[in-house]
Length: 194
Ligand SMILES: C[S@@+](CC[C@H](N)C(=O)[O-])C[C@H]1O[C@@H](n2cnc3c(N)ncnc32)[C@H](O)[C@@H]1O
Image (cartoon, rainbow, N blue to C red; front, side, top):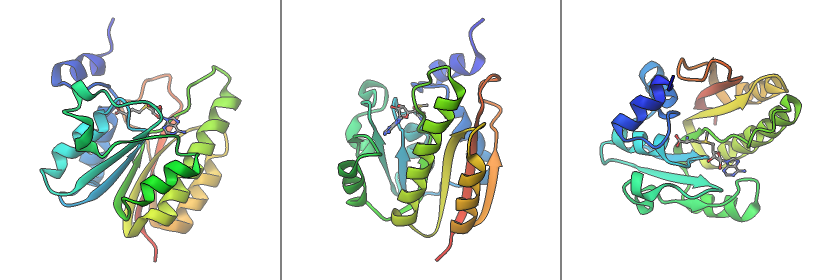
């Protein structure tokens, strides 16, 4: 039987079911606000960016970054999302991102391609989350918020501690829309310290 979130995404015109995870986060915490400059890391195929643009209601901007292209036909044009194609672990990508900074909100749904080996997958996810936190340290304004995904089962406690040093308040959130066999979790940092 097809997953209900996949069916709903198709019906509502989103290229990925993952949009409903961000929607839950938004409904619970209201982290996206009109006027915000948002950085969406690991944005492809583009459903988080589409949803974020809707919430911004024409005020603010979304900068997207991914190793893979966005699906332009389903995302109303790549330009809308100020798309940077590149690997966030590479310096050249970081430089391009910094040209658009500072941001009010950084979202990261970035995930490594899974190998089936949980040790390898969690270690790669940890590496991505660490990089996202470095980007938040440098390119998120004081008072800004961060959403970062990580695979559980590795060193996520270390990530949590880093976030607690960087933000006034940190929450761990497991959206209902995450697949039942998924070991992902989202950490949300509120109010970057000065
Ligand atoms: C789960 S998908 C994101 C789905 C997206 N949030 C959406 O709603 O359409 C994870 C993305 O992370 C990207 N990614 C993984 N490692 C990356 C890296 N080092 N640099 C940039 N993007 C990366 C992948 O290419 C993939 O598109």
